[in-house]
Image 1: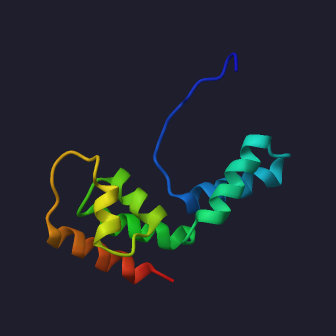
Image 2: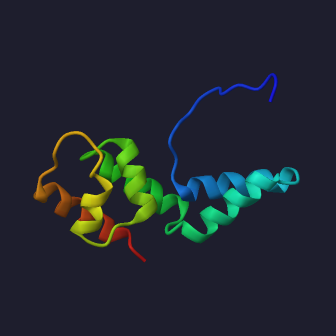
Length: 110
């Protein structure tokens, strides 16, 4: 990888990654790694791009964007799942915040 460098990094949802991989595979033959990534996001993407973006925007008012993207990718079902996602995070979240997050997530659940 001589001559290649990272220009920018922004966290994105699985749905956005899937869309980007699909668009790039139309232009040229995907590499082995891109095929693996496409397989992963196809299996685990639970929302379409528009819904994922709306969910992240709503959650961003309550929590950090990286946390909102994790939640949009996983779509936790109950408080226990949500607590596990925040187990390594610094700071404490109140039960009311978790319930509010779950309400927002449930609006977008298929």
